[in-house]
Image (cartoon, rainbow, N blue to C red; front, side, top):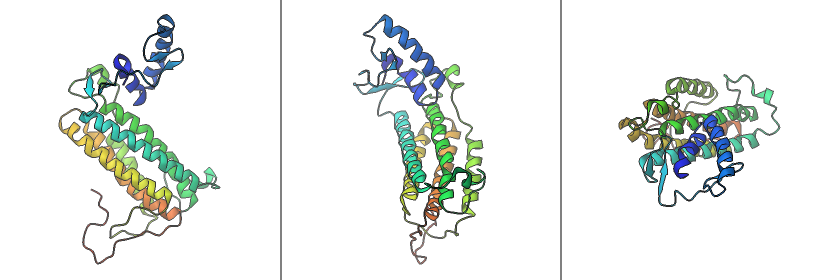
Length: 262
């Protein structure tokens, strides 16, 4: 909500770090010349500028929209997702305490469930948070109203990232018992937090669908979020096993799909 400078703030928030650094340096010069300039200090940005108080904010392309616009719904959901992943990281790190990094074996193969398994998940979760910055940049740059210059600076290779996630899903799945019925979200703090990440990821995907259909967001963003939620489901099962928790399953006599994943 930074008024005329908010599009640059969005750049920094959604993965455009070089632009943010450049603008911060400019802000230092501007604030020195104009001490009353709103939104800048001698060290960079202030957190508040009051220009969003009337219920509007700016996208990366400079366009002002209401805060209840579908684009901001999607951006907010992705932001919540990153926060949920941060909580999952914290729980996994706590569960992996005492496990040396070298015990997590090679990054491409999931170790047998245990503390090393929780350690193995950590860099993947951090990587997902970093990729979500790029997802946010793409969402904050509507394709139908942004210049080619802006569009060239955002995007994500959703197909390639989905392939990476599928490989991780497969290697974790190989360490788990077959699943034929629904399970209850839970299984210890790391698993429960990963299930929460899955649910928020599903909501993020639902928010992105209308943007993709309107031609405002690349379809690959939806592909990535879809596969990411699948990853969280399997990672939650793997984390439960790694923490020594048994899965709580719905009875085999109940009809219905096994996971609820699509």
